[in-house]
Image (tube, rainbow, N blue to C red; front, top):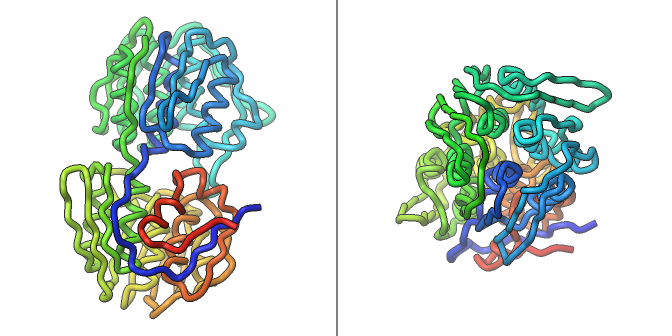
Length: 416
């Protein structure tokens, strides 16, 4: 099994381009099942999760072609299967996002309970609550969930929590429903806006994406179109932290800076220089890293997907930092691995208290999930010796060529 090896690296310098956002590409691929003509998606990241979602679409009867690097063509005019296979669903939680499109397009859908990173319970009850409100009947047995409806009818839906996945699934189910659907307390993430923008290009009528109230007027059918995936704000944030932790000077290109305001603010608090310039951001690190506190929140708050990377950085800030995780209850799985590398971190419920240390030391470690893997890569850049990271399939699920990109910036990183 492959491992990523990271050696003590010099301050990282240079330019790096952010790939298209995984968390935008996956729902948009799922939404492609709603189109009846050719769909071209551009700037799709080359990731394991994308590969799995393309397998899901193919298994449902869609034609999927890779035209060029980052360009995928999908035609779903003849989809004929409404069952998502267990072996695909178990690989990736986002496979559940085909449920809304299949329900509204074919009138029925069947799937198994989703898999993915083990970062805590991510219940699907909000997805199902939305489908029920639109008139679907839901059955659950032996780990499978099925939904069916002769026709979906628009309704007002209040989400108890602004779940990104539930917001996406309900939007996709509502686009072909009869009448208007209003989603209150909707997720406001940029990825929701990108999904709505894509669906509107295909002929949908969605307003309010990016706010807490989204209105979807049902249409008879959707056609085709061309759409470019937004930049990955979490990948951008990870490279920004790489510059900060190594005392480097990195320009991250292909960035929408309004999407990463909390990351920019916290890096400035820690003592870094952050210079925004159109669609790029430059981060200049400092030797005098100051402590800070973060509290993860749904967008536009500090992203839970950047918490692990920041904790690595905080481990080297002089003084005491605090992390409060409010989104997932089991997202401190990287802490034990960082402690193996010399970090001083204490967990108290959903809080982590980090006492800065002078340096980290290399150790064999395991990536427990995608962002934990990124955090360990960052730790390896500054740890004494050679850090060996196992379970790297998690990293490959969310970072397109992370070692190639870091190597070009001067990192000593390779696979073994």
